[in-house]
Length: 445
Image (cartoon, rainbow, N blue to C red; front, side):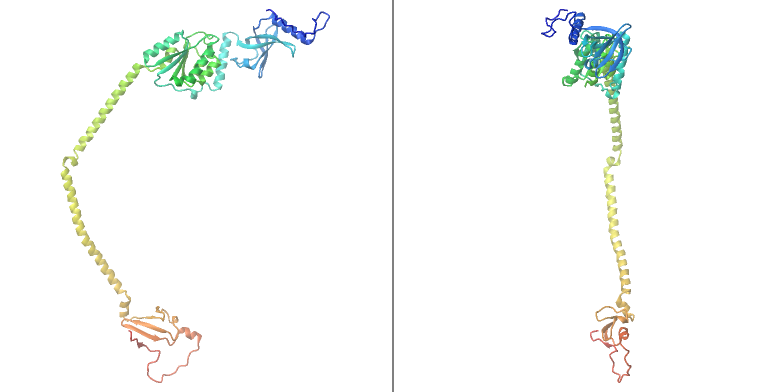
């Protein structure tokens, strides 16, 4: 490789000779130039991983039976490695060799890491599946239901793939009204994974606006290397994040890819994918015919039931002889009126008899009737009934009520007055003239 016409030594420095010492920086610069001139820009090295340190960046050694090389893989490149690195694993790394001035060591700056052989790819596939399973990419609750009657389906595959023709033939035969739209991508090679992921991302973003109901992700069979694009993490993420339901059919029936496991429905072949997503016209016609027969039978049974009810209703007396029902009602009404006319006088007679009995009972216990039997009652000066001799005082005027009148008198002696004053001396009356203590008729009575 030709050298650029730049002098890396300081302008005022002279070339170092056998007897003239070099600075450390000058020696480091010569080592860098020697490595740059002696090695290509990128090298591929196969070896065994040793002393792996998985921090933000990966630091490890690559060794074989005769030597070891220090390697560093920065985080931006490490994130693109699709398998789990472990000590003792055989890998092929791609990168550039450079001299690290600060530590005075030669390092291989790794940009890409691949396992060795097909067995390594299978190991990488298993590790990817376990990783995505832990993230929930395969959980059933994340699976979207397929549309019952899709009208527009996007097929993500290569235009030259035989799988495309299988999908077209099957879909056309089953349901001609379903329109297919091809999203042409590479399905094999280094650029295939990025194109597939980009196609699914665009369909997820714009598919609803375009009326796309579902996506078929497919390609024909091949080796594990041929199908590896469908095992890349970018494709798995695109399938998982797609808003449209995806039916995946990659390779033959025995092949299993990560994209199929993440998809909403996995099919063995492209033909089966089309059969799963596109309804069958013949089957639908058969279903319509059966539903028509069931509907006709149901309508016929309903009509027969309605006819039976109509015949039963026509036999009812209301419809056979409506005048008879009217006459029966009129007869019941006349009978009710007759019983009502008889019930009113009878009830009045009963109530009058009860009233007479109550009147006689009231007359028997009335005060006037009691007085007629020789009883009387006395009223005090205030007109209230006297119930005890202690309710009066000497000199008060009281009234005695008899059956034929009233007698007024003055109290000569009272128990309440005897309790407070000495008893008066008893005198014999001088004449027979009635005294104050005798009753005299009340002229008002």
